[in-house]
Image 1: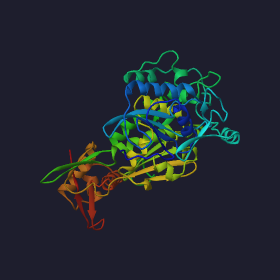
Image 2 (image 1 turned 90 degrees about the vertical axis):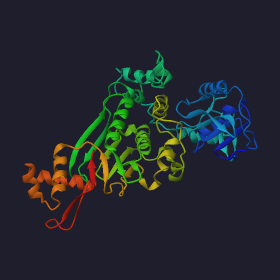
Image 3 (image 1 turned 180 degrees about the vertical axis):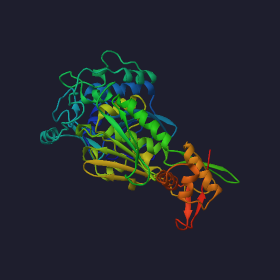
Image 4 (image 1 turned 90 degrees about the horizontal axis):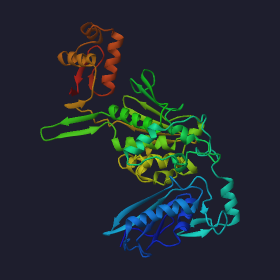
Length: 437
């Protein structure tokens, strides 16, 4: 037996049959999407799928070619092992261009279905009209790129690195064209040159008073920009090593998997129609990632945190998945909430922000910090080690730099926990909490 039972979001099929597309359409039109398993009978017993690789390919081909509007970026077909049997799992997101329908029957009750309870039910004409009237109109696929002279050499390189080759029809195959065969806004974001960048700001302390770095990663393919920001965060998310008499413990300021997922989600689901790109802010005690657009497709917070996938930009989702920046649909939230609770999210109608606070206990005495600090900061730490009672004025004279600059250095080292002070400013004593490697 499996641990699964059929529900509003789960459907079992013993084998691939002619009802596949109907079930997928029903999930696409359903607010929460769902998952269909091939190789599990109605009682929830895994029986497996013979010729599983060819079945997987048949499923992908049928969903792509037999359902309209386009489903690319809205489904994922994977192979799982349940109770020792290999089964096919089809993950389906809620679509943005409802109603979805069977190509053979068109946008009519015979072709439109909706998930009701644990089954697919035909939609009435009134329901079809209601869905159509609410269809997303400002999707990236419908918005023409602000300029049409675009090249995609960077995108081709990323695809080739994953074993794919983009042919002359790649723009059409990847849905980078509008209905009028012009490059759409998704194409613009993925082109070698564009006017969009991801902002990364770094501040000295816990507030926005002292900006010490203001960088923009962009004006290039969104894939390249994403990888560059991930590299930047990997540098900022330092590894700290606590050495005791028994063991050596290492830990990042922020869980790297959760941080990566939060950034990629912010980029893929950002509402670019507002012309507001994602923003990353790095403070001495936290990292904040903000994207425009709030929750996609009017998801509730409960649905959002449960991992329901409802891509705002299905064109980007499909391509990010192709180049393996995104794994299976709906997995990102699960990866974040594995180590953090939902309180790290701040959700409003227009923005979605994730805040990762550093562990307050992560910087303890005798901690070695694998981080590059400049020579002036090293000299300051050495001077404090030699004279724990040293004043800012004395440090200034010893290092030959202004008191204002020394104050900033001390604030940075204090905010990050490298040093701490006990007592008043005049009579207190400094303590060095780390060994710089």
